[in-house]
Structure formats: C-alpha cells, structure tokens
Length: 314
Image (cartoon, rainbow, N blue to C red):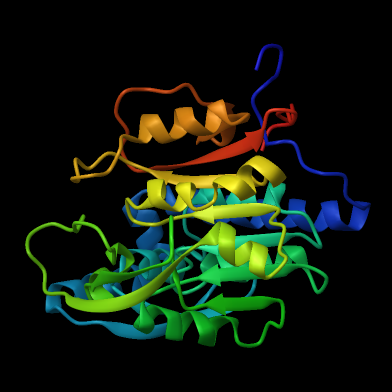
C-alpha cells in the first residue's frame, strides 16, 4: 500500500481501557516470543523441565497429557510431544504472527469463527478478546481433539463447539486421525506427515460454513482457517459470507504437491480479486504481501481493501 509504513494491522477504535489491555497482551506475547527465539542454552536454563520432557517423550514414543498456561492467563489441556501442545506448554503461545493479528483485529463484542479449532488455543484467546457480548464458534470434526476443545472451553459461555468439518457443501467425509503424537496433521486429504504413520479412518459430517452461518444468523468479524490443505474447499463454502460481510480472514498456506489441491498462490489471488489486501508477519511487524510462485508453511492475514496498516511498530 503506497505511502503506508509497516506495522500493526489497523485496529478498530477502542476505549482506552480496552487498548491498554490489548497492549499488555502484546507485551506479554513479545516476552514469550523472545524466549522462544533464544539460544537453546538460555531456554534450558529458564525452562529445563519443559524443554527436556517433550524431547524425552518423543524419544520414548510416548504421549502425555498436561495442563499448559497460556500467555494470556488461561489454562488448557494439551498432549505432548504434539507440536502445537509442546509450544503452548513451553512458551504459552503458538504462531506469534497469527496470535498478534487476532489481538490487533478481533473487536470486543465481535464474532470469531475458528475453522480447525483443534484443542482450542485460538478459541480461548478469542473468547477473552470478544468478551461476554461477543461470540466464538469453533469447528472441529475430529472426536478426540474435539473432546479436549470442549473441555478447554467449557467454562466460557461465549464459545460454541461445532462437531462438523468445514467444506464446500454438505457431505460425509473420511478423516485420517493420526493419534495424539501427530494429531495436528489430521486431515480429510492426503497426509502431510513424514513416513507412513498409523492412522484411524473416521467418518465425519461436513457443512458449507455459508449455510451454517446463515441458518444461525451469525455475521463473523474474523474467520481463522486452518484446514490441513483443504482451505480451498473451505473458502468455496464461505464465498457468500466473504462477499457480503467482508470479515477479516486468516489463511494457512503451504504447497505440498497434494493431488487435487490448488497452489496457495491461486487462493491468495482469489481473495485479492474479492477486494482483500494480504499481509504477512515478518521481522516483528506486518508487511503487505506480494504473491510468489511457491509457499512453505505460513499464515497470511486478509483485510478488506478499505482498511490500512497502522504506522506504529508492533
């Protein structure tokens, strides 16, 4: 965006108290992110057991259920040595850039749609941010992870867990569940895990999120999409909502040469054509994203074109 300085994505107007609370969350996240990026010897001195224990479990081929304290002060149950659970257990957060975007962009009283909610890290954060007048809708089709999601969010009345997969139409799908060690890779598409791990095939119900939101009279403020390479199907099932309401979007991207899965660049261009700007988190700040040919793993943020970038550094 010509003339704009990189920084945080522009936030809606807030009261001084709300803004102070958000800034405090960002400061706490920054401290934990600095520890995450510190040399191993520093992390071992600060968190010896938390660093060692997941590694030992991984070597032993075991899993362990623990309670983790998030940087925003809420406890949640996770499983080690699963990647998502391990990082939350060790550092209290997962995916700094996406976490910052949600803190910056999700308004108090808003509605957060968590597609691929897993065990609830983003749903818990969003529950805190939207407050009692807001709403969180968490889609999670895998029974074992949904049980933990429901437990982690059970004390918060503004969170609704939906036992459905997000898709482009109503369907019954076969989902691969890789167990707790690799449960963050559960998918209805070809597996993205190395080797040939054991998995359980589970039949799950799917829905076009457009239809579900319309049936429940819900207008989203922010939609987080993490569908393990099925993002193109999810976006097709959200087209009416996107065109009518223009919510903030986050989209997990990555090109893994899976059959029938379009390139991430095609998805990004389709959202840009629908009136969005794309942003990426780089070097402790958000910068406007320019489409490239091939993508590794990342999350991009999409804002309606009428919004701009705040000049203050994150």
